[in-house]
Length: 537
Image (cartoon, rainbow, N blue to C red):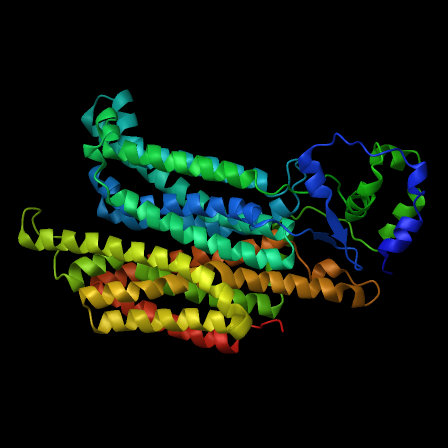
């Protein structure tokens, strides 16, 4: 039985008999209450201003800025503290393993969070704090340890431990935070604004990465900050932390959430629909029995929302519809291809394109040539980040003409062809030019799969009224948080696969194998995107 908005309002007293609205309510409550109710009973968020969507995207800017700083400095930091080579793989594997196991748990927990501040923002704030802590540890760990421990041997051991802990914490939180940010966008925006928001996310992701790489290219030791602080790493931490705190604050103040304050959906729906009547206390009305009959009526339309145990969570993931699973697999192919190229790209430039050697003496021509190639690789990554921002805007123009399938297919195809050409014909200028196509893949991975998740949920919301009597609609329509988390898990799984397998291939066959592997996996993913992923018409 479907409860219509009109019939519900007829069941309520006329507005003349209801207490007058409180005109001094806060702006956030007013914005949260400005929603419409569709004929299926779903609460439809109102249209959001462009400025609000830009504010929401600032979290992606800050996150990617810090990611770029890590990419530029984490290897020099690990080398400077004396990390043994046999522990490198351990550093890069711990975080994705934790993320792959815990990401769905966090997604489910945020779906059921009853904090008065909202469902997603508490998790985003907590993960942001962990990011700052991890960045502080891996950029300042050796300085912190030297201030407390005097013995040189103990200093080295504890500096390695603290630096590794910082890298793991940072990667863990930076990977995790993407899921709640996407779910937050889906919760507070209409379908059209979700598409706009994802494009702004990709735009600011590219801008943040570009500025982060440029920040790493500056010689801060010769600046005022460099003379004021102990080391260049502290200058970088100060800048990155300041940028991230500002971006995170703007993001958290961007769009208010409607808190999930009640244990079941019927009470939450009742509160939202009666917002225009401004009852002094909905709980008082329920206690007085005034709306008891209405609650009984609503109970036939909505199911209680229960907290998921880990066992039921795993069952939910395994019982996902096939089109969700196919989307996750295609996302896995995409990230395996992208990361296998990006993680070793600067090394590829130094060894293959510039014909240098990282193992030569540091004052030798071979080593200096390798170092020049690494610096040129950083500029290539900067080009990739800028092109990602530009293409995120171009996507909006192309979408009405070629649809999500065309965007998804083009992203994988161009990346596969570009990495293949770089591997077959390594040249400085052609490689830098083809780096612009890396940005097409980056923007695609950050937008199209999440747009498809939004399309799937929109389709399911339309189908719920036609569900068979007694059928639980939630069996088909899980929370957006857990679906975003399942998709984000593929990033961690890709890191685990590459951390275990690609490192051995590089040792055996050299850095050239990375771009060839990226091209092969991307072209396989291209076929998967074309023939296996379902697109909503």
